[in-house]
Image (cartoon, rainbow, N blue to C red; front, side):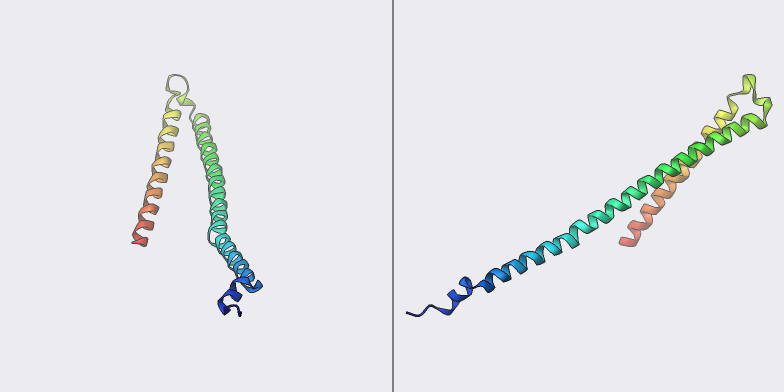
Length: 116
């Protein structure tokens, strides 16, 4: 008795090879489409966080410098008026914070408008 031709397909090594190729293709596609973008996103977030830390440190150092400059340049602000340089620096810090928040929301609005 002769074996039907369709059974040769399932018994042959070519079917195993084809399944292995499909599996390899799936794994490669999965890596390209998920793992690599996640790695890129992680790198983007890491550099963004590091940059934010450096910028924040620079702003704090600049504000401390402005405070020391005000205290050194205006000796009239000693004694009972010694709080005025601190008020000026706090107002300056709030102004910088407001500008940063405004720029963040302006960028988010621009991105959402572009995607629409």
